[in-house]
Length: 115
Image (tube, rainbow, N blue to C red; front, side, top):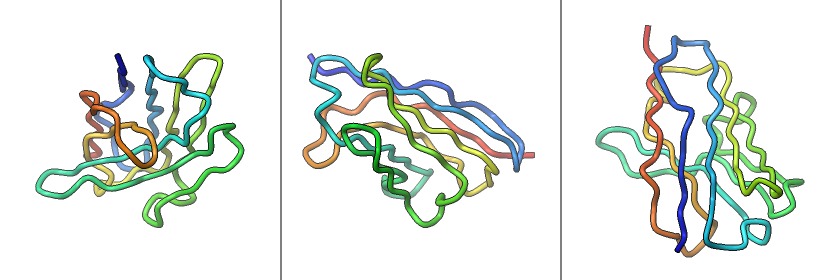
């Protein structure tokens, strides 16, 4: 069955960095556009970044463009999100999923940006 396991979150001060990982299984990872999403308390889940199946075409939501970098390793079935210059408003639970028809959501990884 499909599994998405996110990790790498934590507590970080404003201006700091984190690298998130998402290990995927149960489907052909290399054939799908993959996305990072986040959900802050009291808000709806939002798309943060997207990457093409071969990893050559990234796209970013305006709030994170220039600070976050999405990448993937298809040999390891793993999606990454490098987050730099973190701000308090980046605080959220971060999830990975395919583009379009979602797989069952993983547990996510909590990112808290606070001094």
